[in-house]
Image (tube, rainbow, N blue to C red; front, side, top):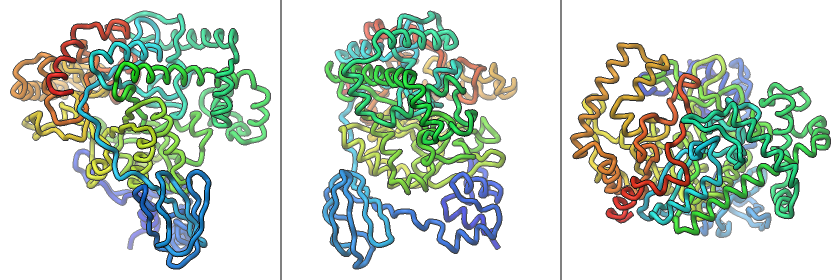
Length: 618
């Protein structure tokens, strides 16, 4: 007989088993199930506790989700019950019977029928595919000659890209980070995804060099920004921004002010400050008014500069302008979880199952959205996160969109397992927010793809990622796909920030970097380099020569609607921006481009890229 804790876990959405990336079947243990249920808000340490949840109806009180097409009348199974419908804008109407609901405008609406609560997600059927085009992908932090790249560098770069015919400029995530901790600079481990990274604000500070020196540059930039604030603390525009952003901005700014006093992670703060609504936190709002104003001012500056970069991009004819990257998760004890505790799971981290490089799997140290609380709160946190990104950009990349289907959670002291996510509702939210701005959405769909996810993404108009180094028919005896076999609803590129550049791949630079970092021994290195030589030979059978022009011509010929030209490849760089599985062993997120935002678009390489793209109607 199955353990009742496993039965409850399965009903809640914790997978009983899964195949890892090596094809090994993994069974979810009782220990893991109990830990993940605890993270989801269910205490079920014993079978008796699990039985009580099962008998009571574990999902009692949660609203139903109903996804329908905007402009149509949904049908819900409520019999002849009286209902009250509250539209997204707050207006209401009443009726009786599930077949009497009115046509719904686009948005997230709420229906109450007796004890039943229903979330109605009225979304466009799909996001229209964009026209064939191309754009540049570049690391924002690496765009300046000295210091950390800035939002002003974005404006400079888009002004130069537009005349070449580029439709978008893709950059790393620019979510708010941890300015009091200079070594926490990974753009994929943010403090708050609905606020901006103020280290990208321009100042006259900065250390030159091939690698960015965050230890020096971060405090110097923050000091310069404080001096600028003290010289001009308020303006009519800033005061209007404060009124527009309201309590949420004040809460974020309070977190930043408290971080400077008590450290970056709220779990280490005095207990009476670990909740933003506590009496102590309310007192701090009064006592730290000047500091709160400073951090709010920084957000206003960042908001203004990023908005200006998008405006400049559109002004020079870029169809989409900025292409922003949304990190898959947030730091478990940063500003986002402090402000919005209810939306996240605690006691488990996002990660990945075991694979060839990580026999024990990966723990990314990121807090996952709690799918049950997302549903309970009508996906408000997800909606706001998407809306904030698309406010500044014509295109958004969702990192690890496999998490719309299921996310891999690693509890603190047990093996990990998959947790089911509300895919259809999350995709409906994505379609709604994209339609509000006319934006496009790209989903990073690399790795173990759950059955049905590709079809669901394609049906929603979410573009996939077709990465040339992965587009092959055979891995052991490498054979790469021809250009005409790439998907149309996709963005095509050679690699990503987590993969080697064109030159680095051909040289096996990523393999030797892993050896240097201690991830591969001599025998493994030899094996990997031998396999890479076979891969390069297969690539050489596909492309007539090893020149980057040939590579870009190949990508331009694919049916994929978007083509991403990577700056590191265009500039013949060898080192990749990030080596997964490393921290200090490799200079992740620190490598500066050999060209700046001023000179990059005058480079002869980009002229040739533009000509190639025009030849293929991009």
